[in-house]
Image (cartoon, rainbow, N blue to C red):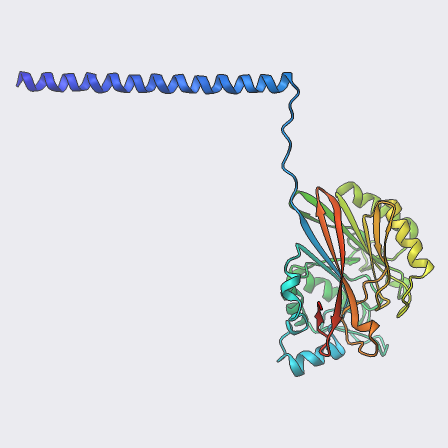
Length: 340
């Protein structure tokens, strides 16, 4: 019995001593690590060493031209696309999904409300067309154009609601003046990109005022003000203009003046719509101007020029545009855009 107790007592002290040694070794190593860190910190301070931040990741922004999903386009969806609204984008959707941000100008409201204002060229896109836009990956669109009022204010406001419900940001229009003129800022991978949209086509009566819904009307002073304010909030500013002369291969003096004005105010990239044909791309000062991207999805099959468009692939890194690649897109007989 005594022998057994002595063994237990000896085992206890053996375990106690081992545990104490382990604790002392642990304390020693922790102290050494803290001392090493302190020395490194002091060295970095004395030598003015700055550890560089990780470079911001690349962002891909794709911008395309006019998208109209009414009239002949809808007819193709019904007759050849089995009423599936992904049909207009079926030939190009895989490529579009490479984009972090995908932008277009939407011609006409997406609604089943309102009354035709009387024009033979009035558009009203089927609400189901939203399925196609989402399938393609569009996450920001301009509504500042001469077709947004084709079915009156009711259809326009319904469009805003439907886009918001679909999770698609819209620019150049809103339920109030503040919303219509304010930028939509997309923040990705540490970079903020502000989007604005304006038009001077249609009627100035459509201009958003105070608490009245409408669109952002293109005026010199307002343009400069909104661009400068957007630049203060974001790393980059992209402005969409719906302007110019239909089917003209060259920009008008008005297009050139407003585009350069936008760059001078701080815009990094201007993209234009409305002519339905491709116009030139140029660099101006520190910015870029694409006067017209032409058609992306449209039923204007009467000419080769109107069945073509540009997809502008913009590479952004470290808060700056590093590369712009214009990619030609052609519409097939079903009015589907394809990259040849």
